[in-house]
Image (cartoon, rainbow, N blue to C red; front, side):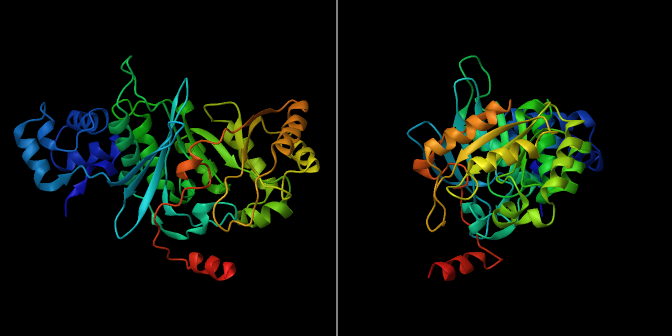
Length: 360
């Protein structure tokens, strides 16, 4: 079986080449061809010796997930569904803005966590994505988007906020992050790469040590009672532990704040008392808030908070001196908005079945 070289970051590729009796600079060349050059055929790597190319043809491959479908929203958002085998597909979304282009990348087929307001969570879980399948999403987007007139990459920022809980697929996500940050890979700065987590405390501590990129935490509630209901992981790592982990992370983070994501659910977590609880909760954590109007999906059981309720909630936080943005809903006409990514998941958890029964 051939080895997929996209599964390696530079240290891994260098070691692999050493086992093939090849020098370290060859690994750098191949890394540049794959990621900077978008090459998936060794014959295109023209500065490699012919002997090395034939050796690679025999033992290796550059295998990216196949493109199943592509959709474009009226607001310029683009969504790709990529084939990851055995009837499974994962979604990746590009969001263009005036000053940056952000790619939202998936880390799992489905999600092992069961946040109740998230469409991906309803799909159940199949497996973790490999490093090649994670970085392959950025590879595809760069191929599709090309460069700006100034010869800069259109994808300037990456957020690990697609399908799945990134820190539940720790090793493969860290390898993919390493490729994103490497100058021979995509050369992104740590500040422009964000990992989003529902609050896996031990893995947050590990990430801080091995790959401290920007961190976003899916908070979504101001107290344990509500969070236990909508983010079940909270029963394992309650808010007090999560806030302490955020403080520890900031010791090595590239940004001097944590971003707290907060989905606005009508009547669940959007009352003024919830906003006051939040102010108290985060008083020792330098942070900013991203309020996300809930993006509906069939049979979710939730409604989006009214614009007025969101405004009041935002104003209470801002009056306490917190930085707050309300996320503009992008790509909802192609189900590419936050919490709407469903892909194609051959569920191994029977979760889809459970929701069907509840619905029936």
